[in-house]
Structure formats: structure tokens, C-alpha cells
Image (tube, rainbow, N blue to C red; front, side, top):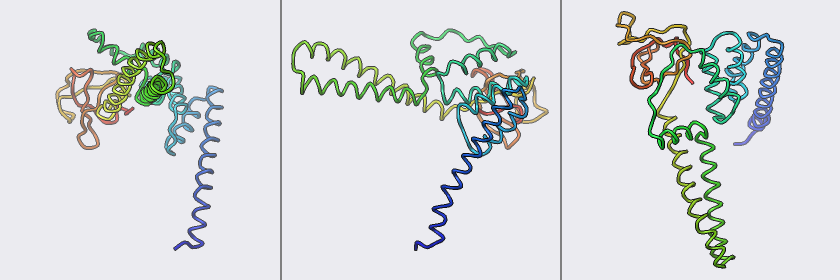
Length: 255
């Protein structure tokens, strides 16, 4: 039954959401002002307050990374720039900042060169991301479909068909590639969780307990894959797949 209380709720809920949005925007502007005046700790406090309220944006994560970097916390800086990169994988500034920050990392793993097509595939995945590659696949599909209809229904001349048929084939191949890339990226992101080490030095243990043997050492800023958790204190991680062990939960920040 629709009564006066229901009507009031319908009126108040949008007003409340609008007020919350305005408050977050006010805090964001104030935080930016603190950052501009080099008061990085004050700016970070406000950015974190906004993040805790549920707002997620590229600008927020990017600015948080900048604050942490200015405060000398390289691990947290990389963590939040990685979060920003998940939203805009092709942003040149965040990729530049990540490249600079990684120069300060102690652990520098040199990976063997992958087979060229595989390396190109992974480079495309990192550069385009799931959302953009999906939009590209839609563009290729619609363009190919329109060209196909035009060549069959309206422009039946031989020269147009000779021109359109190869283009339709190319667009079909690009559609399949970008759609597959999007689906693969989404699946990879769902099945692979990563984190950034936040402590200066981290002992990676053979088991989730303090008395376990130390297998190897890692350092602040290193990116690891999260494999499993043991309670609320320990996390199993892998470093480039070949090194696996356990670290404390408070030594890592998820991305």
C-alpha cells in the first residue's frame, strides 16, 4: 500500500544521495587544495575518507598514489597507481609514474623472453583492458555489418564488392580478436588476484606460522599474486609463479 511514508522515502532518498555526492566532491576539492600546497598527509586523509565512503574513480586512486609517493611510501604509491590503471589501462601518466616507481624497487625479476605472438597478446591485454577491447569489438562488428548490408543491398557494383569483401574479412578477424581479448582479460582478472608488498622487507615463509622456515625475501613495492588465505593473519602468495610462500596479511595491500 502506497502511503505518505513511502512518498517521503522516495523524496528523501535522492536528496540524501545528492547531498552525499556533494559532500564527497567538496572533500575532493579540499584534498586537491592540500596537495597543491604540498600538505600531502592532510590531502591523503581526505582522499582516504572519500574512498571509505564508497567512491571509486581514476582521479581518486591516482591522487592517492601521488600522495603516498611524495610521503616516501613507494609500496602504497604503486598499489594505488595499479588501482588507477585498472580503470584506465592506457593512461600515459599513470603508466609513466609506475615505471618510475618500479625503478626504486629492490626486487627486479628478469623474465625470459616469451614467444612473440604470446608477448604481443599480453601487451595488448595490458594496454587495452577488458572494457576498451569489448567496445572495439562492437565497433568492428557494427562497421563490418553495415559494410556487408551496403555491399549486398545498395551498392551492387563489382568494384564496390571487390573493395568491401576484403574489408569485411579484415573487420571480422579484428572482431574475433578483440572479443576474445576482452573475454580472456575478464576471465584473467576474475581468477587472478594481486597485491603489492607494503613493508620494507618481507620474509616469505614455508607455512602460515612465525616459526616456519624463511624461503626467500621480498621487498616493498613488489607485485605478487594472492593464492590463498589462512584465517585473517596469513596470505599465500606467488612471485612470478616460481616462488611460492606465506606472508603476513598486514604486509600486503590488494589491488
